[in-house]
Image (cartoon, rainbow, N blue to C red; front, side, top):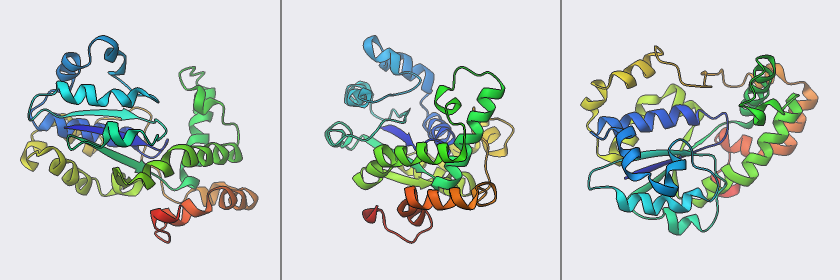
Length: 245
């Protein structure tokens, strides 16, 4: 089984990817060794992150897995209709993380501030965001091009930011069912337990406070957020079904 973790930026997608990797490990499949075996040749460049169009190669990787082997991969790729064929097989499952656009836009802006302050040249995406409104524009584009199409494709299992960060055990239950992993095995996974307890940090991730954008954004920027992302806001708040996005 391959777990493809797609995430809206700043939606705890990295944390979800770590959870998926830990569950795959707990099922008895060391991920690094498996990656070295199945991601060879042209596929070697996908060992860390899968970009647009790379997902068409998932079928090649799935064919290299032995029965009972599970592999997790992470992507921010925009959805393409042709993924229906590449990813629509029973041994490939997509996980989708999403977040309220106000909180995601604020988090993206603050990531940009940190990157500029620390002169971190490895984060040009966030460094280019210089205002709250800039964060809103970036998030609106990401939702339109990637997150909403992934959600509307009905190809994946969706998880909200709140589910991933506040109801983590329920997320782990879903992942265990997908890869046929015993719950007891999770308790014996020291890396996972350190992650859940907070003793182990996840790169570029901190559990944020939902709704903080209301305190930080001006009324004008909140109105702009509603203008650009109103439907998705209501979806996140449970007022609209995904089909209405």
